[in-house]
Image 1 (cartoon, rainbow, N blue to C red):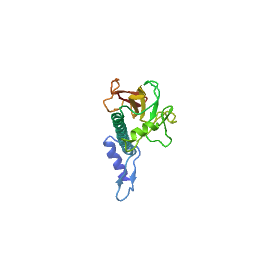
Image 2 (tube, one colour):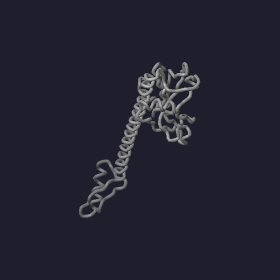
Image 3 (tube, rainbow, N blue to C red):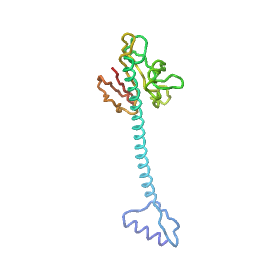
Image 4 (cartoon, one colour):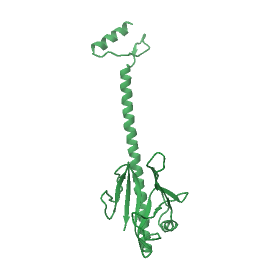
Amino acid sequence: MVRLINMYRIHKRAGFTPLIPLFRGVGSQGKRGFTLIELLVVTSIIGLMSTTVLAALNSARVKAENSYRIQTVRQYKNAFDLSYDADGHYPGFGNPRTLNAGEYYCLGNYSSDTCRYDLWLRYEDPIINQALERFLSQRVIMKPIDIDLAEIDRWDSPIYICYDYTGGKCLNLVIEWVMMGANADCGFGITETPSSIGKKFTLIEHTVCMLYLL
């Protein structure tokens, strides 16, 4: 008890009065424990460090995922370029379409031969697949992005849109995909300002990228 009173006086002279002193086995050795305030401070520091580490890990995950998305689009772009060099046009068929009312096709190898892009169900096209498989070892897909928690508005990508048919041949197309994060870097020199390369725009917390092959 004398030791307890002396330690209390020392703390008081130092201008700090512990609210709830915790002692480990006050006895012959008299080792002092931690006060409640000290424990709260340590807990706060650990919580802050945990938040910082988790934020850094999430940022690294998003960066890696977006890099993979750009690399996937690059593979399809190269395959389309080679297909154009071999055939004199891009793969595709049908009636003339415009960019705003074009037919969207899935690029990838989906088990159901369908994908979701925005609220709509899209389809793979066998002619496009056959043309690309000459220059791709596999038709890769990207991890889908859910705009809402109900997974109703889901974005599988990339998507193929042919919007310039001349003489029944596709001469101009767009590869469209979604990146994680607002105003994300789409690569290929794409900016928010439309150009001959493409354009991008932010959709809620994600970025829609459009690459033109003219």
